[in-house]
Image 1 (cartoon, helix red, strand yellow):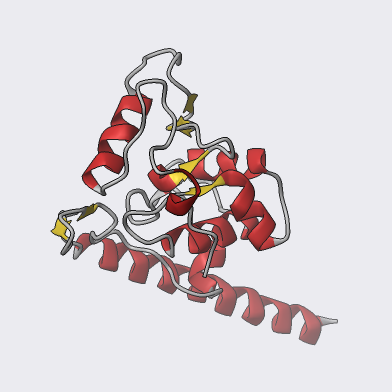
Image 2 (cartoon, rainbow, N blue to C red):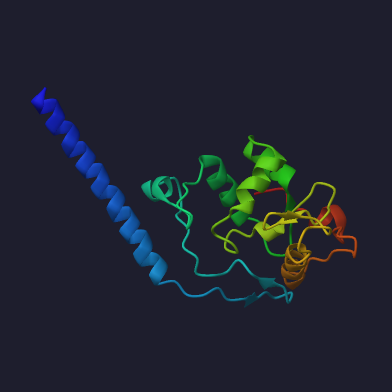
Amino acid sequence: MPALRTARKHFVDATTSQLKNARAKRMANQENLVPCRQVEQPDRAVDLAVCGIYYPLANTLERQTYQTKAGKHLSNFAWSVYDFVRAIPVGKVTTYKVICDSLGQGSPRSVGTALRTNPFAPFVPCHRIIASNHFIGGFRGEWGMESKTKTEVNDKMSMLAKEGIGFTKEGFLIGGEKMIWKGP
């Protein structure tokens, strides 16, 4: 039994060391980041997702140990949503339903929940997600034109306007289905 305890202790020590190294590496990378910048596109749209936000790629130990500023871990579903949303091109939007259908799991509401707590915005451009009926949808935890502050949706519309996407005064997408990105 003492040999088993020693082996467990070495395993725990090694795992703890790996976690500390991954956190230290992540923190070092975050300190060297540049602020977000707007990049002009040929059609005069601005890509708000081009910035120096640190984002762990692939399913690595860093993803498993990543914690938000609030100290919470992200679920595998949230990582899948963020990976999908990162692929949405400038000048296009998609819907909460398209995302869950493409991932083969979750619901539009669960996609919205993952995006509401998106710690990588605007690198993960959650402002490019709208409702299935082409309504502006939610942003930063508020929904629609009649939200509490009435500023969050206006911010979303402004961000999308910079990327070349327009909405009516009522909050519906101009251009309809041709503006919807269905996935890679």
